[in-house]
Amino acid sequence: MTTVTGKLYGVGLGPGDPNLMTVAAVKAIASADVIAYHSARHGRSIARSIAAEHIREDHIEERLMYPLTVETTDHPGGYRGALNDFYEEASARLAAHLDAGRTVAVLAEGDPLFYGSYQHMHKRLADRYDTTVIPGVTSVSAAAARLGEPLCEAEEVLTIIPGTLPEDELTARLAGTDSAVVMKLGRTFPTVKRALERAGRLDDARYVERAFMPGERTGVLSEVDPASVPYFSVAVLPSRVDQEPPVRETGEVTVVGTGPAGAPWLTPESRGALVNADVLVGYTTYLDRVPVLRPGQIRHGSDNKVESERAEFALDLARRGRKVAVVSGGDPGVFAMATAVLEVACEPEYADVPVRVLPGVTAANAAAAAAGAPLGHDYATISLSDRLKPWDVIEARLRAAASADLVIALYNPGSKSRTHQVAAARDLLLELRSPETPVVVARDVGGPGQSVRVLTLKTLDPSEVDMRTLLLIGSSQTRAVERGDGRTITWTPRRYG
Image (tube, rainbow, N blue to C red; front, side, top):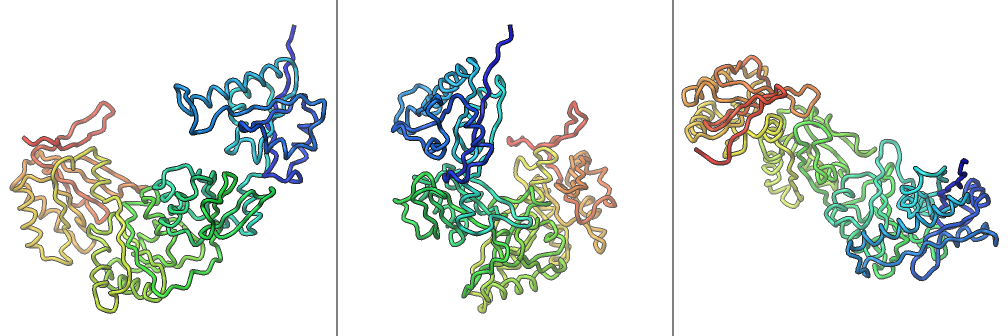
């Protein structure tokens, strides 16, 4: 004999106004034998109040009452353990109705699978019973509608964040996105507000409380009294397309390290600085690595040999009230733009322009990670470019680093106009190092043409090295070992000798 079970509905009711319930939601409630809804210990249910006019006297009602709050539980598994037990018990109650052949509609504010209680029932029951989820208007959409401002446009990215995250995490995520909605305010509001301020986004933030519900309130978030904020409220960073940059008496310059390649190497802080900038300035090749962050931003690209002019241009823009991000590959303080900007910034006419430097993953660190851990002990970083310092200085530093038995990271080893430096450096190092010293030849690390090879000092071919290559010369302790997968890895022990 075949047992016929009932059907489970997860019914999204929208943000609070019964008029925003979908036709499908009304039909699902009408077809149900059992109406289930979650409630706090006081017994009242927002979900039930939204659907009240559609609940009949012949409906069986299952009130799934949360037994506790975050602060009050003696469960051995803590708050999460107590909640898990509650969801198991609630699912068992609904399963009993389904096994009896009854159709069950679980009511959910907003959308059933968006930060909702229904999802915990769904995970426990959907694989055992015929289940249909009826989507609902989310609080995110409701908040945007009440503000009357677009959430995101064109290539903008919308990030939805729970306000319960730690402040540092909130700050990083808010700084690195275009548009955002922060859920679950209430007691988290002071933390969220601080995070918005730290991310430089507080002036953009809007506040929506109980959208499409009694007691609705909207406004500028910075003006909201933290003591008045309930759980059913959200913070919104709307679209910034067509948003005019604010008028400032003085802007700022932030020198941003983008890492060795494209967007995956950006730190959240660097991404935030790029998102929030009015103008991006940099060597064209590095600017092209920066993703499209915000429509309306202005980009000024230039040649890689005009660092001082680029720095002066950025500082002039900032002096006229612009927030300028000077884009630098790798880390801006390692053979890059930070020095050029700070040097010009120390001129009297720019003394009042704020300048920040944000670090990035260096080319040496990226190459070392791709090869293993050759920088595991003391190391020196030397540029082979003699455009800004004479070759005899470079030779002296190479000899000193080699004599001290340091691993050496060689930047700017060669270019179209500089072809002899690698051979000269190799020959010099062969006077002081074993010919079998491991050498990492790393080209375009993080990019589509990435190539990382482990050679020896005696087999290093200068003709295979160009400006996009970085060399790591091992010390006497550096090891190179071929692994079972055929890959040769290198590392330098932390213990010496």
